[in-house]
Length: 163
Image (cartoon, rainbow, N blue to C red; front, side, top):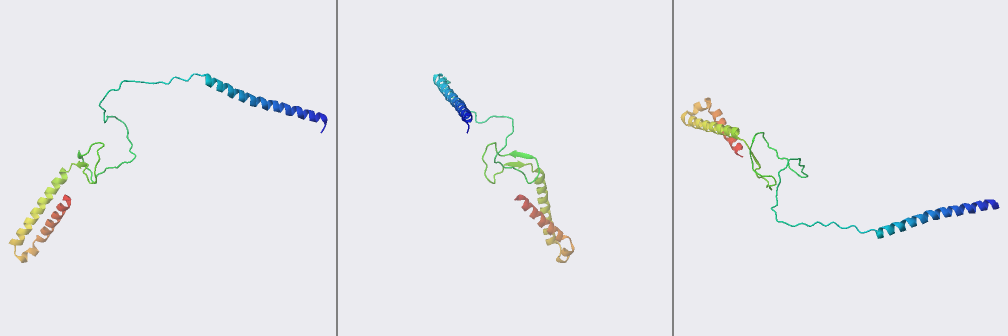
């Protein structure tokens, strides 16, 4: 290497060393000044609130309007359509399996059941009358077999409706 080249290399290394030393020194000085500022800063006063405690009645429920989405829930549906006559629970009540939650208006079905029971009684009466009043050879020709079938079908239907 030429002597002029060595001289330039040394100057360059010295300048890079001074530059890096300045950067490191500046960061150390900055940390020292921040620490000094933080040490001399006053501690902020803590805010404390105080109030007199009174006994009050706690409100266990509140009426509000809004939307509620349950994370766990049950969709309650009916097997048949109809108007709800009564709801047998209140919001938040615990219910047991098999408990009747709502009753539908069943007046039409009750009237139909009573009508079919009356038809079953009438068919049974006609069957018994025909069985005792008509001679055996006429019973087969008369419509006693359909009357007997009507009587059994009506009785079976009314038994199934009661379940």
